[in-house]
Structures are given as C-alpha cells and as structure tokens.
Length: 174
View 1 (spheres, rainbow, N blue to C red):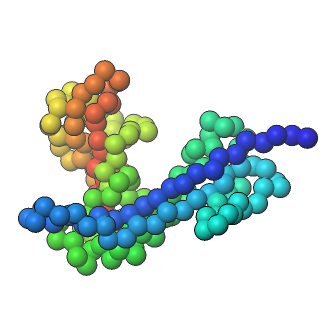
View 2 (tube, helix red, strand yellow):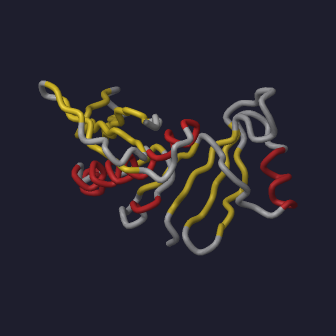
View 3 (cartoon, rainbow, N blue to C red):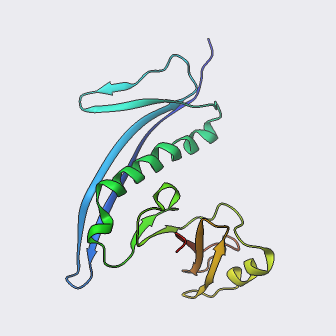
C-alpha cells in the first residue's frame, strides 16, 4: 500500500476599510476556506462539526510542493472577496491588495502590494536601480510588459540578499 503526502490548509481573505481621518479600521468582508491538497486517488473531503476541508486533487506527491497548490484556490478566494466588498464604490484613495492583482486588474483605483519577489521583472541595467535603493526610497515607475506598471519600494535593508526589503507594487495600465 502506497502512502501519499497531503496538506490540510486553512486560508483566508478579507477587506479592511481604513479611515485615516478618524483613525478607524473596519473589517468590510472576510471569508475563510479550508482544503485538503493531495494526489491520493482515494482521498475525499474531511468534515466535522461546522468545518469542511474540501478535496483538491493535485499533480504532485512532493511535500515541498504541496504548499504551492494552495495558491490557486487562495487567489480565487481573494478575487471573490474583492468583488463581494464592492471596494471601488466606497474607495476614494486606491485600494491596496495583498499580493499581485492577477485576476483583479479590472477593479478601478486598485493596486497590488507584493512583499516577496519571485523572479526578475526588469532588464539588468534597471535591476541595478532597484538593488541600489536605500531604505525608505522608491524607484521610478517601470512598465513591465503590457499588463501592469511596476513601482519598487525599498522598505528596509537586511542581509538576506539583494532583494531583501524590496516591495513591488502592481497597477493596471491606464
């Protein structure tokens, strides 16, 4: 009998409206989901009381890759919550989303704030501009492909690597 790896995960998304004048933050909408991620052909949903871990069949048995399988359902949940909140109607300033815009590029006045850089977005000469930023400074706005603009902000500098402390901001093209 073969033993296959699996991952039971809880993931959530929510929208918080901040009123800086009054110093108040309000949770507008939030949603929590749970999933069981495995390649096991016999696995099914896990349920108990009011909790259900919905089965998600994945193509990997590598435990190190199971965490990445959560990203797709998490992105779908984030899109759903963004749309449910009707954010553009009450937003005067940009709505700031945690992570890339992905399927949320149609939301007006919305930007994505990405804290971890997964790859190279700029040619070598422009990457030098980014990696030489001092804490608290920002780069010029770069256009990356046709999908979005890119603004890079240096929040702090650590010893972890050249991109430590670098945040990326995605914005839809205008």
